Image 1 (cartoon, rainbow, N blue to C red):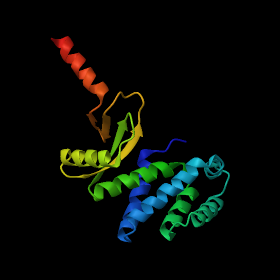
Image 2 (cartoon, rainbow, N blue to C red; image 1 turned 90 degrees about the vertical axis):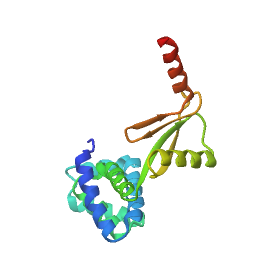
Image 3 (tube, rainbow, N blue to C red; image 1 turned 90 degrees about the horizontal axis):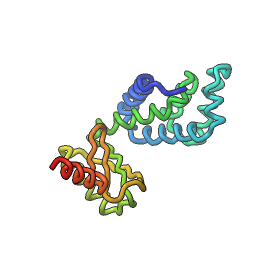
Image 4 (tube, rainbow, N blue to C red; image 1 turned 180 degrees about the vertical axis):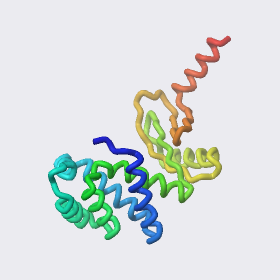
Length: 182
């Protein structure tokens, strides 16, 4: 079943408020992402947690045991067990994303998905992050790099709905456009 963004956001908001109140937002974010990765990577686990004939108590117990193995905090373990018991384990990835977005917004961070033809060096990544930060009014920019072999060179940064095209492909396209317009 496809995760509902509204459902994911409501679970994430409830967890975020509790984690923030307990000053555990960053550790809980990491735990939530680990738990989501385990469910996403283990098809059998995802199937069991998604079956309607498996009781809520069994799902809660299984999630609690997995949370224990993952060394989740009590809050993380309880949340994972609650989500599993409610039959929403397939939403964990979307919940983790919504939680991360809330935490980033609170801390003045944005994430830039940067497509490049070749891997960025540490200095290139830092320079790009600083430049994007200035363009976004000083917000901290976290660069998430993706290799894209279709690019000839340069980069394309996606920050929410904003796209910064510094790729050679984009420059050639703009040049072609100017030349055809006269």
